[in-house]
Amino acid sequence: MSPVMIGLLLDALWETLIMVGISSALSALLGVPLGILLVVTGRGHILERPLFNSVAGAIVNAARSTPFIILLVAIIPLTRLVVGTSIGTAAAIVPLTIAAIPFVARLAEASLREVDPGLIEAAQAMGASPQQIVFKVLVPEAWPGIIAGLTITVVSLISYSAMAGAVGGGGLGDLGIRYGYQRFQPEVMLTVVVVLIVLVQAFQSLGDALARRLNKRLIGKGSN
Amino acid sequence: MIEITNLSKTFGNGAKVLADVSLTIAPGEIFGIIGRSGAGKSTLVRCLNLLERPTSGRVTVEGRELTTLSESELRLARRKIGMIFQHFNLLSSRTVFDNVAFPLELAGLPKAEIARKVAPLLELVGLADKSDAYPAQLSGGQKQRVGIARALASEPSVLLCDEATSALDPETTKSILALLQDINAKLGLTIVLITHEMPVIKEICHRVAVLDGGHVVEEGGVFDVFTAPKAEITKSFVRDLVDRELPEALKERLRNTPLTEGNPVLRVIFTGPNAYSPVISDVVRRFEVSLNILQAHVDYIQGAPYGNIVVEAIGKPADIQTAIDHIRNQDLRVEVLGHVAGHDRAVA
Image (cartoon, rainbow over all chains, first blue to last red; front, side):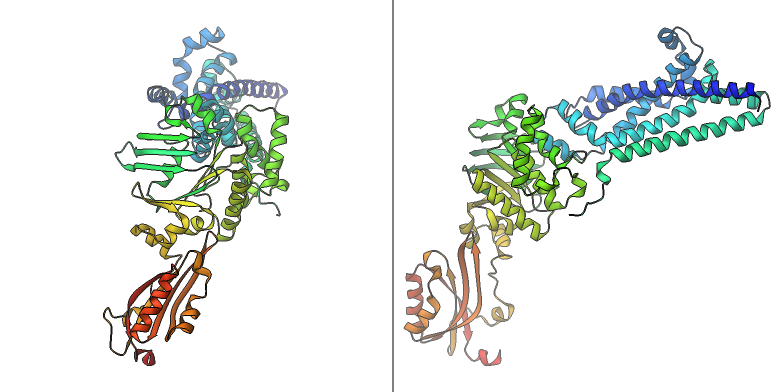
């Protein structure tokens, strides 16, 4: 592979990492709280708000069922408003984040629902306020599951970011399509795929290790 | 200490779980509430700290009527009502120390003070060496000890136990009950204990209420309820413990009317101050009556003996009657269960 090609590959890798990194961080920051709200405003939960819950649930579902490639172009006006341009890496971050927020929210919601209701009851019996229940019971207990969900999100975003080429976002997927497919350079396509596999593998292992370390439910019984 | 007045609870689906329950629980008492599953006992104990809000009626704990309190007042009141659970409900992400510290953290106590309070509690429940362990590393009994230490952390005046020993083996149950008894004696803590196991009531409760279909069907001192149960459900609870069923072979031979050449079968129940006196041998020595013991059972409830002896009385009817009167004069109960034919003994 030519040095020029290697240079392009490194640039694309960098763009992918930027897009995935920033959109992952933003979607975690916004998606996890949204997931918490979806849980605690649910029926019979500590801050039951049926109207809010069904509206938020409907929006999340709508966002999740929109194909990413359509979302990408549909929110161009919003993208322009946020980053000032509708093309380039920065412009790709906006739709990636928008797509990932409801994804994170649903995964976080699932982990939070796994928390034993008995723990919430025990905390209530001790006089805990709803905020204390969220931050001292629900989130710490669901944390390993939330980390696992964020890992899935990062991996999905790596895959989504391949479509960012449609708005000139660059990145590995875009490189693979433009050089590998459109310019008939299958070795570029192959290299891109290999790099992506390594990237996904690395993130998944990292996430798994972190979730395992945080999960105190799986500690083996010590000698008594 | 705890006053429950005309408490009723109907769930959203129309199911009436508790109907007009009234109970008074004295300070320093270990009060048991027993019932089969579905009797409403879990709902009742949850009404005592308003985890369940009653449909009607009042719950007064330490002179404060809980049903009238605002959310924030209720949170403060709950800190003085400890609770332990069947499945312990410990936070899996926290160590033993941090689980016990949890209620103190909720109350906003500074770290140093929390540490000062947690250490003696772990000492009290015998888990000082498990301070840094996570719940997943503990046995069921140890988990419940953590639950007890956690419930005691905010120095409550009442401890609610919701089937606290139902998930434990008999040996561990005994040690947890001993710990509760110890705490009751040491700290003067009022304990309300919900269970479906009569041995738990027998072991540590002072008084007991029997719940059936959302109603309190019987209430009283544990000894009285055990030795003279009135409601059918209580009798069935007690039957397993104080064996009052006659053996099948004896039942078949029993006749209702006196038989010529037959002997009466008597049940003598030993309770009260004369339960310790040697009544049987006394009767045999003083009257012309022989007693053939067919069944005997002596149990200790709350430390007091409760004996139940079934005998065949052999002798002249008049002598037997004098013997019966003599036993009754000592404040012991005698029932004539029936009569058996004398020669049956040779057959049996």
